[in-house]
Amino acid sequence: MRFIADFHIHSKYSRATSPQMEVKTLSEFAKLKGISLLGTGDFTHHLWLEELKDTLKDSGNGFFEYNGVSFILTAEISSIYSKGGRVRKIHNVVFAPSFKIADKINSALSGYGNLASDGRPIIGIDAKDLAEVLFGISKDIFLVPGHIWTPWFSLFGSKSGFDSIEECFEEYSKDIYALETGLSSDPGMNWRWSKLDRFSLISNSDSHSPRKIGREANIFDTEMSYKAVTDALKAKDNKKFLSTIEFFPEEGKYHFDGHRKCNLRLKPAETKKNNNICPACGKPITVGVMNRVDELADRPEGFRPENSIPYQRMIPLAEIISDVLGVGEASKAVNAEYQAIVPRLGTELEVLTEVRENELLKKVPRKIAKGIINVRKGNVNILPGYDGEYGKIEILEKEEAIGEKQMDLF
Image (cartoon, rainbow, N blue to C red; front, side, top):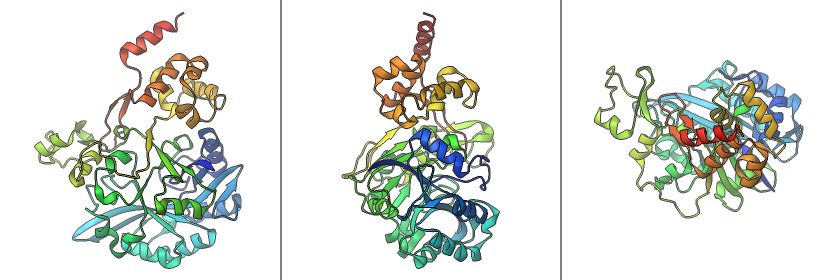
């Protein structure tokens, strides 16, 4: 069975999240987006876990169901600890096959910090020790390092990460089968480092609001079960783990280097020229994902390993509509156009990736149709994100936008 999964999201109990991040609303948006399997996020939070237990129906296969949408128990753990003479800040996404196992995880981790403080708890546990605790509970637990290149909180982040998986997880490195690329990188960037070849590279939204789910996602062709999905990822089976849907990495908040307070965006070569120091204020520059990949890579740009899982870049439909209309993404105009397109032509992901061009041009306002087609072809201009600022998108070039505006007059 072919389906789309987004494993990493957050609930209303995480900081800076929408109060709409609850099961009912998530299932409604999952249907609009075309997502069949959604991570619960935040199962370490006792209130959210109780809501999940009360709301979801056990499917008997490691998944849970609500209103036709399947859920898989997931949580993100933030580990802050010292190792190798440095403070480390590592985020890991944990998959659990049952509420019974989730309860055991929460009981074990409660000794390392206050799980009730946030949906994504910060606990003082070494990532290696986290792996030891989890796999001691059950070998069916699946552990994935989250958004592995983000500067501040990740496995390879420039500010607090490591230079290898073995340095972080030690003897448990063999039990790590998948890595989450994050919004500021895509599989193509990760293919440049041969040490990552054995891992499945997954992509998830890390969403804090229902509208953002599915902005990155994973496409499978397996039976709908916890074991089938995790086995496909462990084997890196490209007949079962078919592809990923990706942000344009330039749009991510940490693609380039820079210093937000000084409104300074830098390419890696410019950062090196300035010795990692902001030329405006003299403080350290936040070294972004592109620079960090360059530092560890042992292959040129464009290299593709054998048996790699393909991917497709995409910009969410609301962002496309927002850009071509020149109004805010949360505006009534954007919402009206979105509702007129989805689900009339299919789910959002079907509209963005599958509906034929001629059908788009016939049934969608021309500027929006052209925007979708441009995104499919990669014909977009993006001012790269840096130091916590999302990149800025230009989907229709000025001449194209003027021409479309003139056509709309007739």
